[in-house]
Amino acid sequence: MKKTILQNVVWKEGKHFVAQCLNVDVSSFGTSEKEALANLHEALELYFEDYKGDKINKIEAPILVKQQLTHA
Image (cartoon, rainbow, N blue to C red; front, side):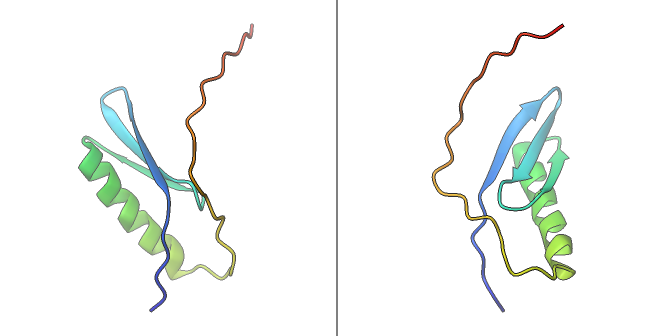
């Protein structure tokens, strides 16, 4: 079995926590941070079950940056 290290981010959105993998376009949610990460883990297992590609985006030291946007 091949082991891959993935970078994930978790944040609170309303009454739920959202967990998102930065390496591939997969995310999930739960009522707690722990549940959101467990759900993300399950979603990633399902994603990689049928994954045919050989390239996973390598994310090193992500930085959270705030940006202000003015719109109509």
